[in-house]
Length: 273
Image 1: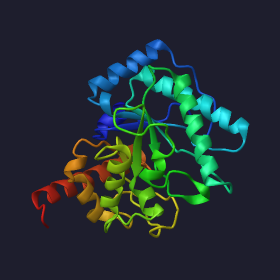
Image 2: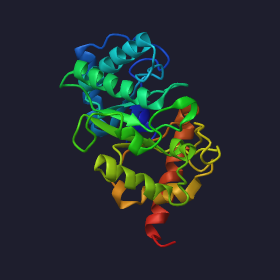
Image 3: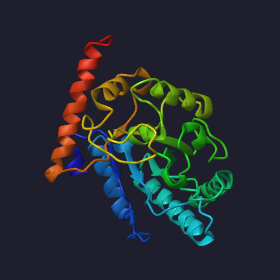
Image 4: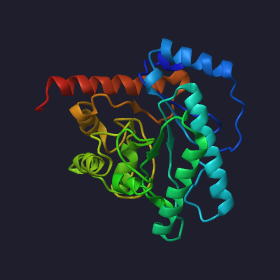
């Protein structure tokens, strides 16, 4: 928390266990109380999120992997609830080489089971859109909506979008792609913007289905997209998280934040430029 404040962050995303491991250390009640107090003191209480481990695949044909995914996701949701986090971000998994419709059905059932196991005090689940490689599910807001039993505002499941993933999935964010994205959110989720946005640039080709992150301004999206997104009135309350190498002492994060705030200020001062 102290590092986030020192870097000038207004939102925070963390892991509640190592991202490539199933096991997690115990979370004590006193530790949860201390975290809540620290988040409140830092002004980040409503803007702290967790990211689920990358190992999870609730859409898997393997019943053992799917069960482990459900169990860990339920635990992540309970832990995040105890910490007072605003949500748990999840990559919804992959169909592999199998049938996508069947994989979506497995994922939908697994997510419903995880939410049921997590209980009413759990944090909200945020499904993250993916670039689409290897049979990944949820490339669009419409596809994400098919993975939940009831998509809509105020529910236990929301949306996290990533600019690098959207570009890889084929949304031309330098053209009409941003309006297409928000249009799909409105149509299929009944919301003007996602609950969380991963503001990553990328160097991959549009529609490549590849997931590669770069600091804002060091990829194909650059100032043009980020200025547009940051000054979009529909996204005025949207928390944005960077998923980039932090650098020594978070130097790269600090540099990216300065750049984004400069772009936002200039774009707001010249809305028609």
